[in-house]
Length: 247
Image (cartoon, rainbow, N blue to C red; front, side):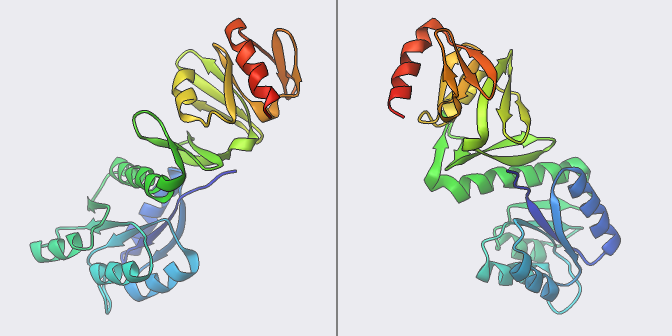
């Protein structure tokens, strides 16, 4: 189950807009549209509901980027990244008053764009799910209700808890074996263990954590999950049997 961030580009220089679109798509994001005028952007927002808006401050037309952002904020809670080329102090202060998530100065590098969007992506996950988020010890959310978000091919994808079979440690990496595909994370098994909901998962071996609801068979020294034989550590066997009895 994947969830890709949708981004609206509001830019009246269509060549610049097209270039930004190509960069975002190459980073794994979806572009909901490239709109040259503020009035059109407001109509687009109602119909498409993007996750982020990239807004040129100096839009041509009846309303500029700052006025467009203000009108958007009256109806939608959508984060704004302003694109600006030599904005004067007055316009900069007007833009700042709308509380944007970021400013990017033109011309900008792909890395500038990538970092700005990734920071917003993280903040959105925190804000949107703070009431139903299981947090790690450092407060960074990973688990959201019945799913987790993992980074895969330069984008964040949503994976349903019920579709995760087991997690296998590979030194400082972990491989999540799920229904649709596998995900390799730069994280120790202990780090993942601290973040995942304990009512669903149990570490049964130094190298394996299993989704309790996905266990098909339990033997003396191993369990079977989707035809995969996974060893049980001696110290974990008692807890495993105790947890299975409560399911």
